Length: 242
Image 1 (cartoon, rainbow, N blue to C red):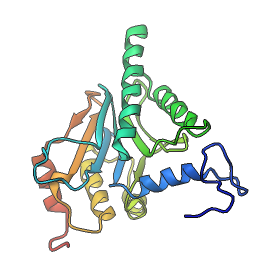
Image 2 (image 1 turned 90 degrees about the vertical axis):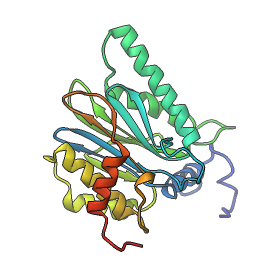
Image 3 (image 1 turned 180 degrees about the horizontal axis):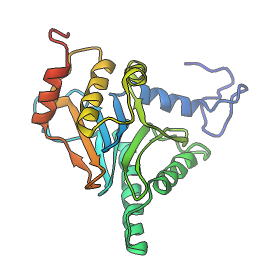
Image 4 (image 1 turned 30 degrees about the vertical axis):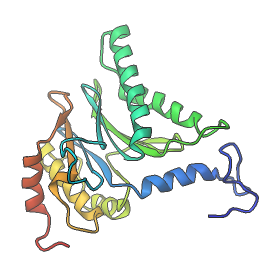
C-alpha cells in the first residue's frame, strides 16, 4: 500500500486524516491470523482458538494460542505469537509480584491496564513497531468472571463475548444472535466451538482447536482435553463440510 507523503513509514507520524498507519497495519495482521475468541458464562470463562496448520512432524499438543497468565487468568491470542510471548511474560511477572507483595491473586483489570500501557508505548516511540497481536484475556477474580480484549493500539475493552482474527465478523454475528449471559460452562464450550466453525471457511480438524476454561468455583485455568474437543466438534460441525 503506497501512502502519499510516507505517513506509514514511522510510528510517530499521524496522517492528515489523523490515523497512525503502522497501528492499522498491525491490526490487519491480527485480522488475517487464525481465529481466537472468548466468552463469559454464569459458571466461568471459556477461551478458544485455532492453531495454524500443523506440520506432519509437529507435536500436536504444542500451542501458540493459549497461555496461562496466573492460576485464575488465561489468554488466547491472534497475530504474532512471538509478540504475544513478550506480553505473556510481562503479565506473569506482574501476577507473581502481586502475590509476593500483597499475598493475593492479581485483579484482572489492573493487569490488563499494565499490559495496555506497554502496548501503547510501542505506538508513540521512534525506532519501534506496534505489537502485532490482539489478546483476549479471561478469568475469574475476587469480583466476578471477566473478559477483556487488548488490541495493537493499546486500547482494551471489557466484553461478554468477543472474537479476533479470521472470520471474526461471522463469529461475532453468531454470538450476537445466540449468546446468553446465563450459559453454563458446558454450553459455553459448545458455543465457543460453534463460533470457530462459523468463523472458518473450511472443515475444522479437532487437533487445530484449543479450548481452555476458568471455572468460577475452582478459579483454576484448565485446558480441555483433545478427546473432549473432538466429541463436541463431531456433534456441532455439519456433516460434509468442506
